[in-house]
Length: 123
Figure: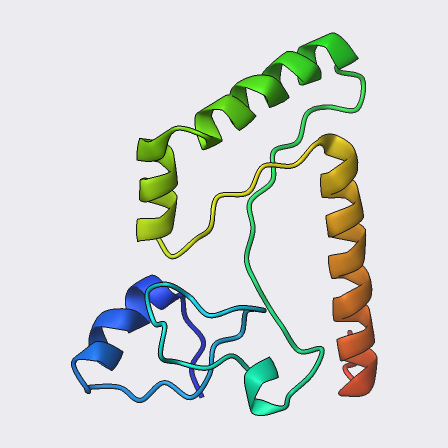
């Protein structure tokens, strides 16, 4: 079994050199729109997706992080930036700090529950 990004797998799958079984994300990738997700195949609560987040040191003044966030969100609205992210297999999403914290905590909980379900032990 192999796990890789849609960007690296899409060309071999489209050329029938590799058979894709399912996508790990919650929704289908625009790069492989005919490849179902695990959820569509009946496998629930096993979604795995990648994301990028930006962090600042804990004592960074709120005024600085607010300006930085505003500029990042502005950049994410640019068509060229959105196209570049999509061409890499991603989906541009901008979040506030509070939204990102909620998303991150939900991710941690989901992976924790998945680890328990499959009896994953850490050394």
